[in-house]
Picture 1 (tube, rainbow, N blue to C red):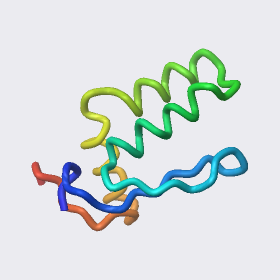
Picture 2 (picture 1 turned 60 degrees about the vertical axis):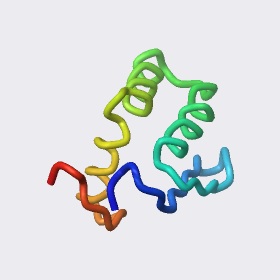
Picture 3 (picture 1 turned 30 degrees about the horizontal axis):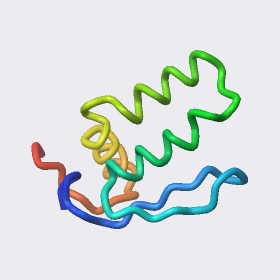
Picture 4 (picture 1 turned 90 degrees about the horizontal axis):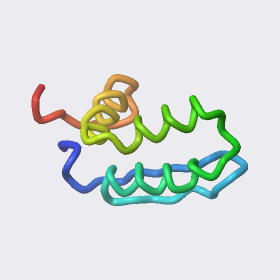
Length: 79
C-alpha cells in the first residue's frame, strides 16, 4: 500500500482528543494539526509541528517513518 492509497489511520491526542480514524493519511495529518495548533505550544513547537504535518512531502515522510517503526505495513512508491 502506498501513502496515497486508502487505509486506516488513527490519530489521538492523549487526554485531549478521542481517537479518530481516517481513510487517508493526508486527512489524518490535517485533523491532527487542526487540533494541535490551538494547544499552548511554544513558538518553536508550533512552527515545527505546523511544518512537519503540513509540508508538501508530509504524507510521504510520515509513511516512511511509520514503516520504519513497524506501525504501517506499507511500501513506499520510491522504495
